[in-house]
Image (cartoon, one colour):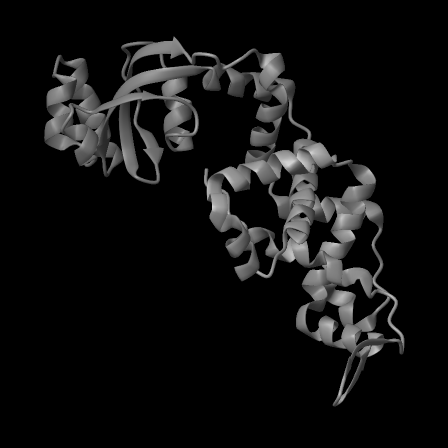
Length: 276
């Protein structure tokens, strides 16, 4: 999946939070007047106070709870550098970032991932995901709008009708329908979740009951299964799988709320009381 720097811009701006103890010391001096720490703080608070405070607090909580090494940051940075190449500096600049502030945003992103990976996931869920992800399926389907249509087609198939012919005649998925419903080989993440769960639970060459998804109702037949070449053992993939499954069962907003509650955050500034 293509990575974007835009979502990391706010995280990089965390450096502005250094003025957390405002006073009358001059931050900027011009020939038309000075800007003090206090004036700067009030302006910053009015422009981005709530979002900035949330960012600063959650960064502090995460930094206390987890460690991010320079090596981890550089590995993440390398991904962006390989993706954007020579255009990366210009892209960072257009988003108000330098390499230094961008690396800081990557540090925060890694902290988020570590917090998400700490979401409690039953071992059986991790192994169930591995069983699916380590195999790929060759399947075909017929997609129709209603459950009644799907049930009628299933009856036809039970009575000996040809799957490929019915797919060409009746499937609303015209791309696969033209191929007799053939979807080729696929693994976890390529199809919508209800379809994936149903397909992986099927025995070879058996017809599913109607499977509802956002696209309609599917009749699925799995033609073959095979191991994903070089996928690795469960032990080798466990950390990666934990991160993926955690992201599916818990969103960042929920994890962040739990972390803030655990830290017993109390906002002293009356103007920012509603930040949490």
